[in-house]
Image (tube, rainbow, N blue to C red):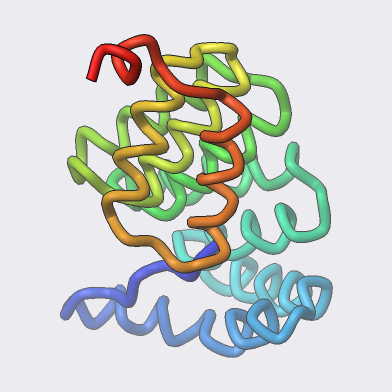
Length: 173
């Protein structure tokens, strides 16, 4: 998962972002367990820090605890309902947990917030593919590729598209 955005100019929001910076570095360095330790301390000190809950979700995702990731992303969204990265992370975690309808709902809700968002399109494409909506998945993944994502995820999307195969409308052209 890619890191969240930096906060806007609200001083309280900036302080909450600053509080999680060391933990985010640990995540980037591949130390999710150490990051979790710090993030739990941050939540004890400030239970209204949506960034801490988001990164707890990210760390839980990294260690394969998708149920706990869902809980953490939901907590972040309760505190900050428009937190895009948390909504996209929630969608991915729900998909992996097999809650496909809810995963699709959250990916679409993210796209309502920010139409054309690449991360949300990718989450939607994967959730639709998992739910066997081939046409929807192909459309979402193609739209995702038009956002010019990073190479690794581009290759993943292209492999998924190859697996899904062409649409009938492709044959009409």
